[in-house]
Image 1 (cartoon, rainbow, N blue to C red):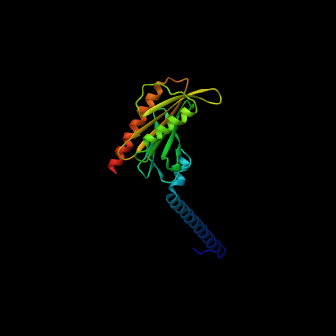
Image 2 (cartoon, rainbow, N blue to C red; image 1 turned 45 degrees about the vertical axis):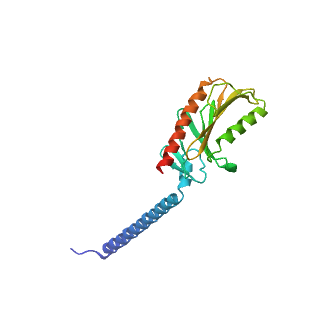
Image 3 (spheres, one colour; image 1 turned 90 degrees about the vertical axis):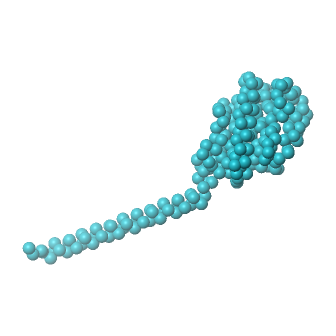
Length: 213
């Protein structure tokens, strides 16, 4: 069947137009793939950036990485995301070689805890400094019948709100550890015993990981 010249030209133009559209679409797909690949490579090269956007605290200090349900330091120190009703809210940098650590607190602020890892054989000096500082501030120590490695004081904030603060030091094979806790005066002092037990257990876990590595 003969084809009219005008119709053949229209078909050729239509075919050419479709080919151009396919080329444009293919180039767009290729460009999008390149962007996706480059973004993926950037995220892999800057894992701490992506982690800091997803996990608390929002800024990770040097040496920390995100693991399953915890943050781990290259020294072996690690801080779980949650310990009972406490959640990790911040990291403590190694200022003046005092040791790295993490801050935990309850949502209502009634309990706050700082867990730190120190150089070996520094626990005794740390707890003595704690006692001296609070005694000089005229805070009276509480007789809680706690172990020798723990001391507690009742303090008062500028808002006349009472707090009970305790400081516990542990000596372990690879390092020393301290736990500073501050609880609201409205809570029973027995809360300190729970905190001591929880973070002593965490200290043992950290030390076990040290022996494995």
